[in-house]
Length: 320
Ligand SMILES: Nc1ncnc2c1ncn2[C@@H]1O[C@H](COP(=O)(O)OP(=O)(O)O)[C@@H](O)[C@H]1O
Ligand SMILES: [Mg+2]
Image (cartoon, rainbow, N blue to C red; front, side, top):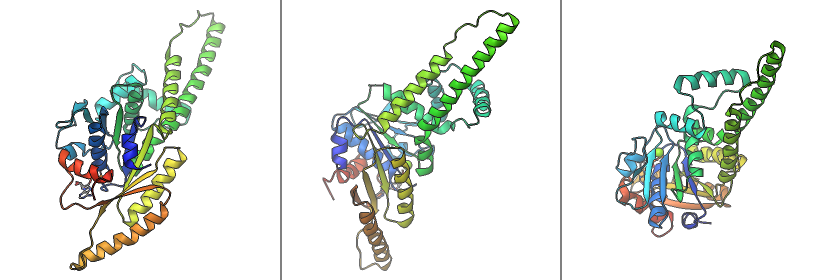
């Protein structure tokens, strides 16, 4: 399956663009988003990188904490996930009604009691968004511009982490409530009023299960790995792919970006060209079972809808 197939396939709801810092994740996410919207899909492009650059890429402010229409492209919306707003939305998605300090105290306490640190708030927020959109049918497709590898891996291991964390909380709550009713029995107290926090936790757990199913279904989700033909990026790609594989997140496509053209008249350029070509050989060999798209280094930055469209046409093999 090529990148063109992925973007044209109407069952693909989530596309994630990821890799090392500076390789072109944001540019590829933006380019795929423009392609997707132009094909008729109601597309939302979301940045989960705390060091956002989606606004710069689209030449439009997407940092306001709300989803906004992207100027110049119909059916395309964007947002950089904002920490403060994201935290509130995450709590909503979790069905909770606690406010800032309560959440911090409760999660510290739960961390102590369950022996497991509660998930990091940045990742939890981004994951909260994913949970929210899995249930939302306002968009046909959501494209994630992810943070560099380490941060994104934390985000992607969150479903597992949250699942076992919530599991422990549920067990804990059951134990506590039977302890409490024993105490009440001993002291002759009345029966406790049933609250629905148990149900809320269970529902959150179910939502997370659903997210894991969707994120591991190749018909629904594709993680596009972006890299440059340099040794450091090759190592990072290896680690990223190994992790994606272990979490069953479909990743069959690699974009090899920023390939310099041959230029024998310039010694410096020629040296870089040869270095990249050597690494490219290794990459082609290492990832022969995957679909590779090679993208040249442009003579300018990839910016604005026009720049993203130019990159997009190369991604789907219509130019080169
Ligand atoms: N093929 C390319 N040719 C020229 N410049 C590129 C290319 N791909 C990306 N860039 C530029 O490189 C910089 C980093 O790209 P970006 O997409 O922001 O990377 P990341 O999101 O991985 O950090 C940006 O200034 C972008 O315009
Ligand atoms: Mg970026």
